[in-house]
Each structure stands twice: as structure tokens, then as C-alpha cells.
Image 1 (cartoon, helix red, strand yellow):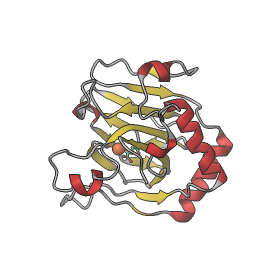
Image 2 (tube, helix red, strand yellow):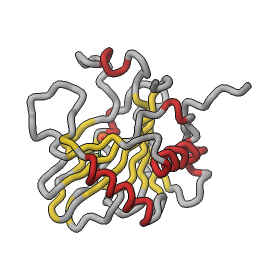
Image 3 (spheres, protein in one colour):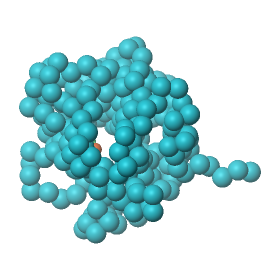
Image 4 (cartoon, helix red, strand yellow):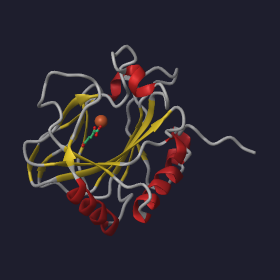
Length: 211
Ligand SMILES: O=C(O)CCC(=O)C(=O)O
Ligand SMILES: [Fe+2]
């Protein structure tokens, strides 16, 4: 029996047609346009519209304006969500059991998610609470579900890279450095939407099985 795959890699991702590496020596980050078609994006937007709730953040923080968007836990047993999860797994090469449930996010004009990392601060007060079972977050896979009228780009300021929302576009990155330690160059800011709405889905993978 072969072991389930726990990790992705640049070679694996670049083998998929259309995947492009973001040219920075400080981060393993990739972009793939048209990963999801218009119909699939619209179905996910409809789910997020229906089931959204105010977003929360993991690490205690006194800034109530840090993450002003709304979140939606997608039902992993719904056929279209399962299909998306399999699509993520086929691209990443990571076994589905290492993934958190897929989340949707919705931003109105003025809403944002200020600069943060997706990994949990290894020295943070809540590290044990969030990571004792499934471990640290490893890879992030994110898809923009619509074209945003104005604003809403994702800014990676350490590497000076801006990713613009575009319907169906996937961006993914490794939250760790090659030595396995967390990579602060993954710091990113979902900048304010200026006009229209913005929808994304996010898939985070862990070091160990999620449930
Ligand atoms: O909406 C974005 O552009 C980024 C979202 C994000 O960083 C997150 O949900 O962790
Ligand atoms: Fe993030």
C-alpha cells in the first residue's frame, strides 16, 4: 500500500498545463488562469450568498476592522463542492484528508482582510488550540470567483506582488520555506473592494489529517 501524499511541490504544479510560477526566490507561488469555468464559479457564488456569516480570525487581535468580509463554510458533501475538492487534490497532489473544509469569502465595497499569514504563529497563544490535532497549515489554494469592478486585489508586500481578481483564476502558495519553517514572505492583504462585490474560495491543507 502506498502512503497518502501530504505535500505538493513546484514540479507537480508546473506539470499541469497553464500553471505559471510567480518569479520570486522567496516563495513557492503559482497562478493558473481559468481553473474553474463560469458555471462552477456562479454556483459557488450562489452558495456563498445564501450561507454567509461575518468572518472571524484565529489569532486574538484588537482591531475589529482587520477582517471585515463574510465567510461561508461550504458543505463538503454537496456534489459540486466534492468535485471542487477533488479538482484541488488532483492539482496539488495532496490527499483530500489533509484539507480543511473549503471556505468561501465575500467582500463588499470597503471590506478587506488586512495583512496576515495563513499559517498560525508558532509562538502565538492559540497555536496549540488551532494546530494540536491537524498540525500547521502547509499550502493555500485560492480561487477568485468573479471579476471585481474595482479594488480587491491580493497584495503580497514582502515580495512586491499584486494578484488581481479574475473569474476562475487560481493562486496557490507554500506557507513554508524549503527547510519546513513558516515563510513570512507569504504575508498577504486582501485589499479593499472599491466597487462591486468580490467572492473567493480558499482551500488550506494541514500537516496531518483534518478529521
Ligand atoms: O480574498 C483574498 O484575496 C485573500 C483571502 C485570504 O487571504 C484568506 O482568506 O486567508
Ligand atoms: Fe489569507
